[in-house]
Image 1 (spheres, one colour):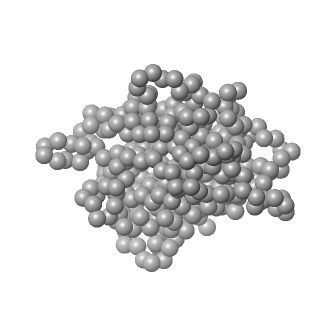
Image 2: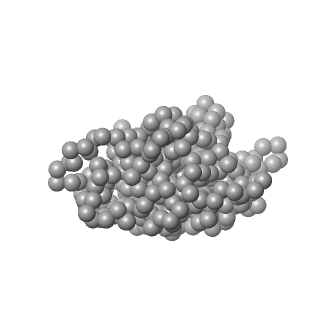
Image 3: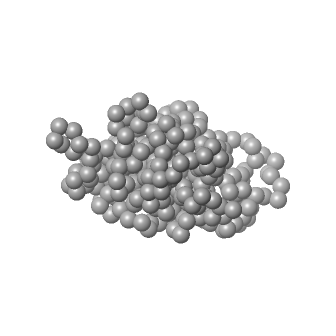
Length: 338
């Protein structure tokens, strides 16, 4: 039986640290995932409205073989500036891809749309995301909170506030798989009008409430619940799946594909035209091993399950929303909804 790592966070993967920065008035923020040494990485995008930086260099045929960090950010296209702040921090400590005597930190990024969530976005000429990225990178560590923090601070779903989620699992061969996700979906993480999570079959213990599945599904459970009047670019679930195994960019591409299964297990509907659903996959290589076909199958299965758990945990831990926010938090829906 799979069990979580000691923190039940993506930082259970050796060589990974995470930092957050956000602004409650802005109702938006940034999350940075830093690697102790360059990590092999890949990406899979299945949403119809993505916003990204430097994702093409992750293709298996392209030159760069390792990334120094990955960034998830609110702010729509403005939030891509967060990666520049993370780059600044990494360059200051001598990290980066060496070329022509210079070091260039490699920091792919993805953003979600939270500009219409009720926060004050009147920031003047320049957005605050570069500074948020710098602060997130400077504060990176092993332990961090979930819910209304970092890239999940201003996130919403169709039925309640979204959030920043993470989870981990230790496989039978001793390898660790961890997920980190900012949940800002056009769809819902909840079944019908209840508080039960679609991800319930994958819950370990009571990590997101222990409600399980409803005794019988509500009659309208499969009616899609989506944000009112969805528009292209207004939603996105962005995530990172990481392992301490050594893996090639091609193998990680398959891992990212498998991790998207967690989106479909935890959100309904997912991968719509209005979502920018994206998964980065990364391998730190802290536990090098020759993987058998069975090992790869277990790794892929775990990726989908741990991602589903991370999504539900992000929503479960979201804080009570400020009065000007667009959605209530899960905790404020009330037990009568079950």
